[in-house]
Amino acid sequence: MAKYTAPIDEDTRQRILALPRGIHFPEFMRKAISVFVEELEKNPDLKPENFVITVTARKDRSERN
Image (tube, rainbow, N blue to C red):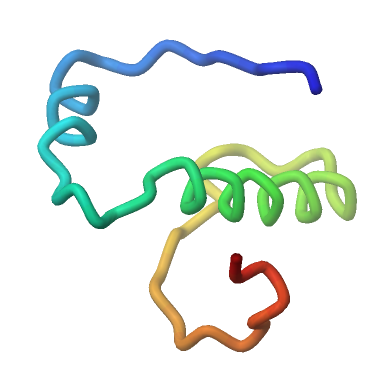
């Protein structure tokens, strides 16, 4: 699988590293990227300011390990 990297600022990097050990950051990012790609496939003219990340109750348990 190809890997994609994007630069993040130092403050964000430190905040990610400070997350509690039980938080699996890559799982959150995998889900977020999947949603972003789906939306961009539907409408490629979207810009970053068109996206808002919110927390919702889990509806699809199929991605759970």
